[in-house]
Length: 210
Image 1: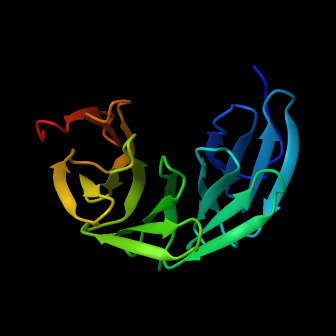
Image 2: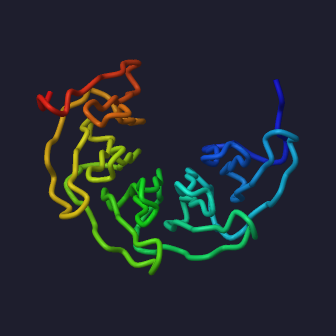
């Protein structure tokens, strides 16, 4: 087992690059670190957020990655340079989760106080859609493998399924009596798994709607 040491506080999120040659981590120390996981070398320590970094995610081509923070922003970083490319601004509270769409053109972020999911254009940095419907903090977001759908999980104990192109809420699933903390699609996109604080994992059949 290897141990990567470099942060000065809790590590909230980690993500491997698609080729497995880089690892990104986001911490309560307000930094993002880019690592060489093979050697344990710290390649870049990225400073720019003004509060805890909650989530990180790589683009499908591995050339960029995003970080979400309690400072209400999402930042796009260059892997080769370690430089900030864009800051996505629009949330009115903490950002809990970020995800790249599979085609690399869109980023999704989960908001707390504004109880919304925002979709961002990677090329322009603009907010292209705001998905509203949850009644409490949104904890997690995940794109379907084909990029046509987005799932969001919330402290309102529900999972919502959205159509990315229109922002339409396709379905709402009453998950548990506890907060939904994590989501993942099956590789073929036909099932969705949700994890909650009560210690359960629920599997949703998206073709059947339950």
